[in-house]
Image: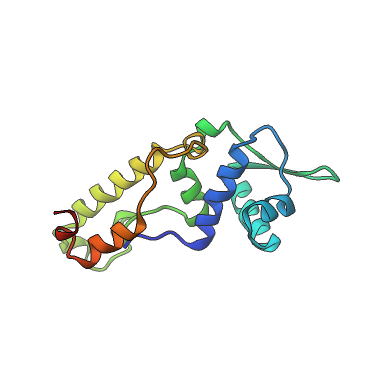
Length: 156
């Protein structure tokens, strides 16, 4: 299963929270209280996002963080990349030279193609999209049933 780290998950929550009021300066303490994480965790994430130019850091008594661009101009792929670095499903789909079997691997190109498809999907979802309610909630129980039933039988 492809999973993002907890910090990356919180990073997307923080960025979406900020995208709901993009012109406002947000403090780490305010964000932490609003989304329910510890202030040091929120501060760490905000600093990481600012280092990758997704946020502007403003100093002073009324300082805090501000989105560097409009919510429609920041994709979820950019947030994930800022938090985790280049994303790929396998080592070889990130960069050449990271896998000893790379030269003789028959499926490397396919992993790269799959990773690229996932990147394009994530790049197609912006913070503006994330602020909108979804039309259909995902039934997590159905996903677990699908997995437990061998994927096909759960939907027959």
